[in-house]
Image 1 (cartoon, rainbow, N blue to C red):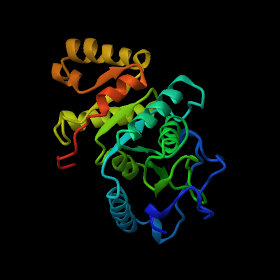
Image 2 (tube, one colour; image 1 turned 180 degrees about the vertical axis):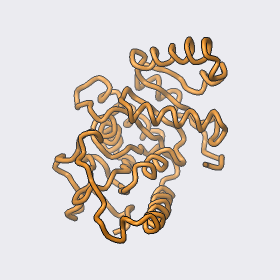
Image 3 (cartoon, rainbow, N blue to C red; image 1 turned 60 degrees about the vertical axis):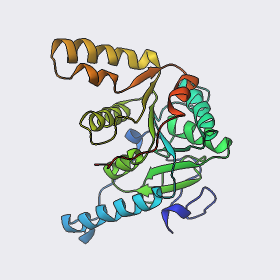
Image 4 (cartoon, helix red, strand yellow; image 1 turned 90 degrees about the vertical axis):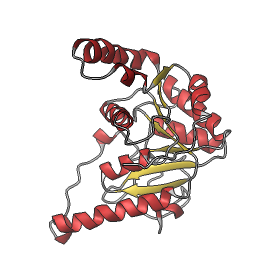
Length: 250
């Protein structure tokens, strides 16, 4: 089955809908490749190429998307879960599809908002040995073996990036996106919105006082590559007019 054909209603045994594996990445079971030809470095090269091809082919069907990042640990009813859900609904009203990592927490919240507004709810999830980790609100999905391929696909072609509070994975993703913009690998016209002043302001202060003023390790203009807001409404006002991508990616 092609990735673009996978829906929550499919009954294939590798698609999880009961939430058993819908947990943060750090809680997923370890997986070791079998000791056969598929574990060879040569075979992995072709597997990686195939994942890139399938991922780009899948994303080509969606012309106007926003990618959500954030903690997989938030539950329905939590403040940031509900803000992400609200923002997903609002952006669907502007014709955007919502792309997430397909898992729980903020990912599920964004997909839930998009699904409830009858919009494109897209999940780029991780393959497990027997199952796929995917939340029940994803309407269309692609699955990846390699985390680094999946991460690239989550950033590829999005018109804006919205980051909610999160852990090491979220911080990794935000700094990678900011580095790509800083080094002009992707357009500086792409909005990067950090939602949650209580969470992001201390990081901004550290970047300003220690990394910029004390160590001179970044330029002052690097501090303007992102915008910190506190609500879904504020994020919506920034993101709703995000321009089409016209840059060459990577």
